[in-house]
Image (cartoon, one colour):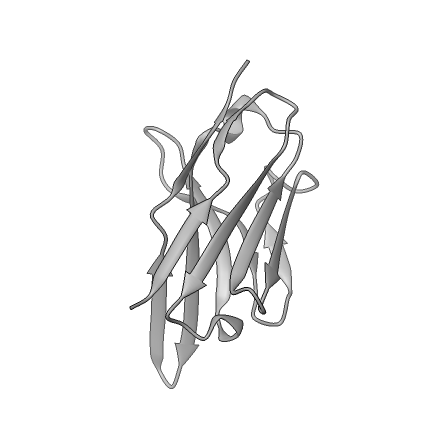
Length: 119
């Protein structure tokens, strides 16, 4: 059974930092691209950052220079380091794993972790 379990969310003041983790099980983690998405109240879910199985990364313009995605294949874990947090970063953050192989696409989501940026 595939599981993606996020952790590390919480309440932080503007300008602060948080590190999110997403631990995966039930998949060949190193073969999957991983991504972080977020969804604020009343808004659509949006991609924040992504990392390929080979380690290439990409970021939404709104978080470039502030957020860093990384992965540790030995621990089956993807991270999102978030610095200089702003109230606009408040959202539920989800991790996603996806892989395409032989014409099939496999996509899995975590349950989400709440991040609140407020003074």
